Amino acid sequence: KHARYLADTAGGLDFRASKTKVRQELVEMIKARLIEEILDGLTESGDFDRAVESIIKGKIDPYTACENLVLPTLS
Image 1 (cartoon, rainbow, N blue to C red):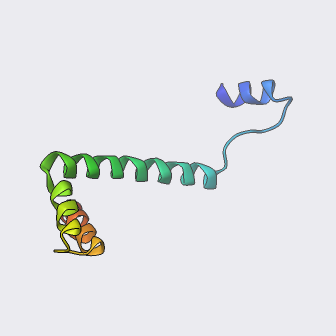
Image 2: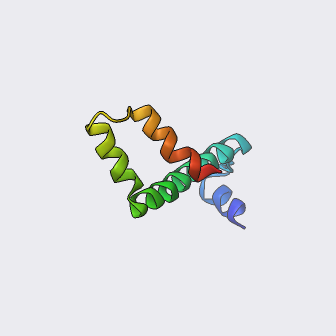
């Protein structure tokens, strides 16, 4: 029905999304959701703020802090 509606209202042009476009959009949605979930967990636990403080104090570099924060959430 939706495809027919698009065709009817678009003067017969086919505006159905290509497989590539749908894949790209889904990948972007997944990335955004994963980032949101990971950051929520890190901020709620205090790990993120501790990492920020460690970076500021020169105890750890940002790249190592990132690895230390992200990798445990993926395993």
